[in-house]
Image 1 (cartoon, rainbow, N blue to C red):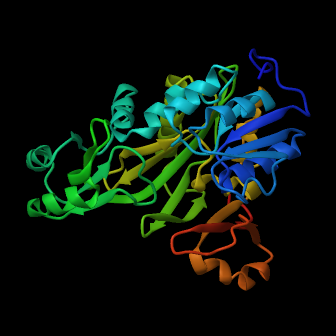
Image 2: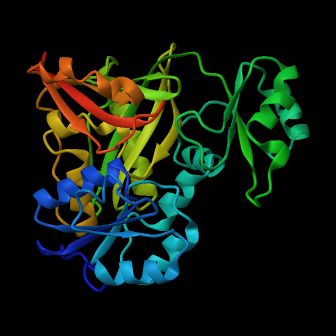
Image 3: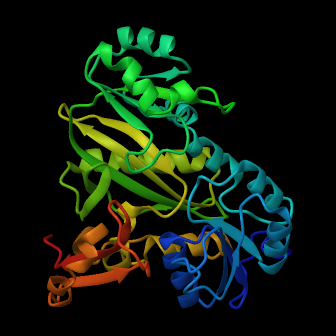
Length: 372
C-alpha cells in the first residue's frame, strides 16, 4: 500500500482491502463498487458472502503473515467488517499502509472492560459493572452488584455468546463455568465482567461516521428489539423524546472523536424507565442495526464507511422514509414469499448456502412514507 496516506482521496479504480469476508464485507464491497472502487477481501472461509461479490479475495488465516503481506501489497487502503481480528495481524498491516479505523478503536471495542472504562472517560454512563478474574472475585462482586446480573466474557462475545445470567448468588459457580472461567487459559485480564441488570424501557443505537478530515456525521437514532440475544428488528424513527435522541447522538459523536476514529462507530444504549441513557457496547464497523440505511437512510452506512476509508467527503445522512429492518435468522429465509409480494419490502440476502439456527441469512427493510 502506498496511496491514501494523506488527506487526498483515493481515485476511482483504486482497491479497498476489507479484512473479514462475511455479510458485512459483502455489503461493503457492493457499496464500494457503486462508488467506482475495486475491493479485495481477506478471511478464512472459502465461498464466503463477501468473496462472491468482491473484485478479488484471499482465503487465509489471519495469522498468515505471508498472505497478509501479499494482501497489503494488492490494496491501497484497508478497513474492517468486524472487530475481533488478532492484534498482531492489524499491527502487521498497519506497517504497510493505512488501516481505517486504527488499532486503538479495535482494541477498545474488543474488550468489554476497556470499553466500559472508555465510556466513563468520555462522560457516558453505563450499567454498574466489575472486572472479574476468578470465581472468588465474582462472589465478592455479587455483594456490590446483587442479582439479577449478567456475567460476560471480556472478549470475543457476541449475539449472546459468552454470557450467563445470575439470578441469585448461588448461581455464581455455574455461571463462571458456563462462560469457561474454570478452564480459562488465555492471558487476558480481566477474563470477564459482571454487569448489573438494567430494567430498561427500550434499546437504541446510533451509528456515527468520521472522516479523514475529522468531519463527523450520524445516522438517525434506531430502536432495536432482540430475540434470543440476536437483533430481530430495527425501527426508525425511534420512539424516544427528541432531547434524549440528541443526547444519544452526541454520545456517539464524542466516542468517535475521542478514538480519533476514521470509519464507523455504532454505540448501543439502554433507555431506562426514568429516562436515562446507559451505554451497553460499541462496534467500530458496519452494524446490524444500521442495515435500514440501505433503503431509507439517504446515504447508507456501507457507503459512508467506504467514503471514510478512501478519503472522500462525508455527507450528512437524512432518512428518506420510515422503516423497519427485519433480520432473517435461520429458517426465516424459507419464508420469503410474503416479502417478495410486499411492495414495501426490500430483500437483502447474504449468499449463505445453509440455514442454521441463529445464523443471519439476510434482512428485509420494510419502508413506509415518513409520518412527519
